[in-house]
Length: 264
Ligand SMILES: C[S@@+](CC[C@H](N)C(=O)[O-])C[C@H]1O[C@@H](n2cnc3c(N)ncnc32)[C@H](O)[C@@H]1O
Image 1 (cartoon, rainbow, N blue to C red):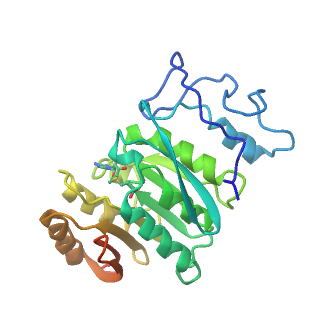
Image 2: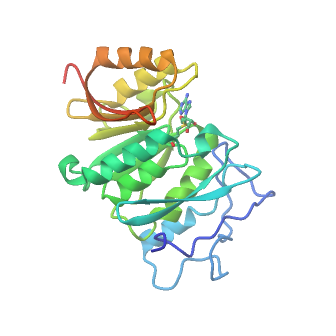
């Protein structure tokens, strides 16, 4: 079985085209990535498809080399374009654990039409699986990561998900109320895999998780535990979230937690 949209090819590098910081082309020219060479949507495509295909007018984040890695979740072959040049362009062990949990518990989690936001989505595997399982997904990450993330989401979900996943910039701790106002946004699930490692934004990460969680929201966080700082983050997580260990893989040191706000 192939990925959902086999006609989406590797986007070409368009060095002359203008780019936003997120890697998006602002050109109105026809897309160069379609197999039929016309640059327009395939015959018979509807308006939604057509507008989705227009999103293919972007240059992926500018890594020098890529690999195509194959995964199988939710009954589908998923091909992820990865690059070892960025932490955010490879699939980390927590992602596969979270994907496995989502596919095994899709009904119990009521993922169909659920509102889901992923933080630190990286190359997008978790968001793709949640989307295939029927959720309305917003995948977020740093600006530099979004081009490759968007490419992988489109490549693997176009024409085969009820709700096309969205991509949005979300820098932990920054402009949260402006970009995700509490009065407007509600998520059933906030997903996070391997967002805790050796970096300087752990407080901002926790602030972001708390901001995005409302009564009824479950934070599903999978992480490989390597450093003492990972356990310190877990302690802080437990101070604000009622925390349940959902799965643990000692051989890979990956743990999966569910957190709901203590005042939920
Ligand atoms: C270790 S990678 C994990 C990627 C993906 N979740 C996975 O498990 O395959 C950590 C991710 O967090 C993102 N990230 C790191 N610092 C961030 C910050 N301050 N704000 C938003 N995202 C950040 C990185 O860009 C990267 O995509």
